[in-house]
Length: 118
Image 1 (cartoon, one colour):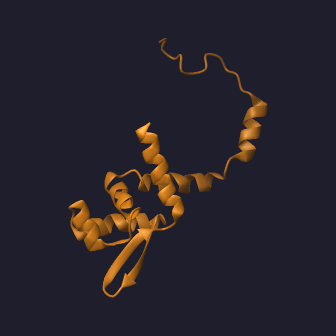
Image 2 (cartoon, helix red, strand yellow):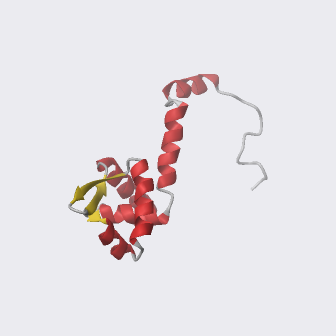
C-alpha cells in the first residue's frame, strides 16, 4: 500500500455534501457530552458493572462480590456511571440498589456485544 493512499491525494471539497451533512450534525456541545458518555464506557470495570446490571439490579455489595472487587472500588466506578446518567440507584434500608438508567444503556451493551461477536 502506498504511503498516504488512505488520504486524499488532491484537494477536493464537495461543498454540497459538506453543507448537507453540516446541517444535520448535532451541536458541538452535545457531541462533547456524547464523547464523555463513551469515555465512561471506555473502562473494562465499568463495562463489567453494566453487564452485570443488564441482568438484574444489584446492591454495591453484590457487585463487589460478583466482580471480586472492594465495595469502595465499585462505588467509585458507580459514581462515574451515575455522573453520566448511565446507572441510577434507590435506597433500600441501608443499601444502595443500582440498575441501568434506561433501556438505551442495555441496547448499547447488546449492540456492542453483537458487534464484537461478528
